[in-house]
Length: 470
Image (spheres, rainbow, N blue to C red):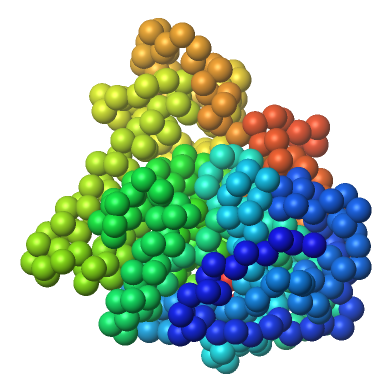
C-alpha cells in the first residue's frame, strides 16, 4: 500500500529501537486527509479499505514497513534530559511522494516503546484532533509544518484525569530530525552517528549546504523565517524545547499550542509554562537559544575546537539579523508593504502597541485593514486615527497594497474555543464541528459562510490554558 524506502532504519542500531505498534481493540477511521493520501501514493479505492485502517491503527505491519522509535534527547524548559525519544510514536517507514520528496509516516499514540519511561504510549482523542486541525491549518497558511494524514479511534479508553477515548494520529513529515536528536549523540560522544545525521539532514532539507557548518547556517536561516511566520499569525507553540525544534525548519509537535485572540505580547497558554518561558514575544530568543544548543552539538565535527566554537558562534549570532529581516517582511506585507525596510519598523511597532493596549483581536484587526482600511471594532481611539494617516501615507508608493494584505492576513484561524468545541462534540460522537472547522481552515484567506468561525470568543468561551495531552 505504501512503497516504503526506510533510510533511517538503515542507520546504526543505537540510533533507534525496533519496536512495533501495540494493536488496538476496535479501530475506526475518523478522518483521512485524502489530498495528502494521494500524494503518498494511495488510490481512492484504498482510502477506506480495511487494510489501510489496520495499518494506521498499528494492527498490521505493512509490507516494507520497519517500525522504529527514534532516539533523541532535549532541553525541556531549559533543563537537559539526556534520553527522551519516541515514547508514544512509531516511524512506520519512509515513502517518496508524488513530488519526489521523501516523507516519514509516523503513528502517534500507538503504544509503548523503550523510550516511554512511565508513559502508556497512548493519546486521547482531544490532542489528536487539535494536532490534525492546527497542523493542516499551518500548511494552508504556507507555514512549514508536519502534516496530518489520518485520525483513528482505538475503541479503547485512555486514563488521564478521567477515562477518555483513545486515538492515533498519522503524522507525515520530511523528517523527524530535531536539535535533540543531535544532542543525544553529541553528549554520548558518538561522532559517527552525528556525521550520519548531518548527511541525512543535508540530503533531506538543504542539498546545497556543505558539511556541518553549512547545515548549521541553513538551519539558523530556516528557523529565523519560521519564527517570523509564527509571530505574523499570532501563533504560540507552547513547548519550544530542543526536542521540538526541527532541523528542517518545520513546525513540529503541536501540544499546548494556540493562536492568540486579543493581542498580548506576553501571552502564554501552555498550562505547564508557569514562568512564561515560551510566551509569544519570547519565541525568537528561545529559537536562538535552541540553535546554540544545536551548534554546541556540531562543534566536535567542525575541526579544531577554538576555531570551531568561533565559527559556530558566528552562525548562531546571524539568527538575530535574519529573524528581524524576516519579521519586517512578514509584518510589512500584513500592512500592505511589498518590500518593507528597517525604516518601517516604527510603523509596525506602533500598530502592535495599539492592539496590545486596547486588547484588540490580532487576526481580525489585520483582516479589517485589508478589507476596510480600518479596524471595524475599534472606535474613538485617537492614536489609531493618527496611525491610519501615517500608514496610508506610507502606502502611497505601493502598487497593490490591498492585494498584498489580502494574501498575508487570514480570515480564519484555529481559534482555541472553536477547537475545544469541536473536541467536546467529537467526544460526544459528533464530528460535524470538526469537519466544518477543518474545511474552513483549508481556505484560511476566504471568509467562511459560517461567520461564527471568525469571531473572537465571548467572555465565557475564552480558553485560558492549553494542555500537552500526553
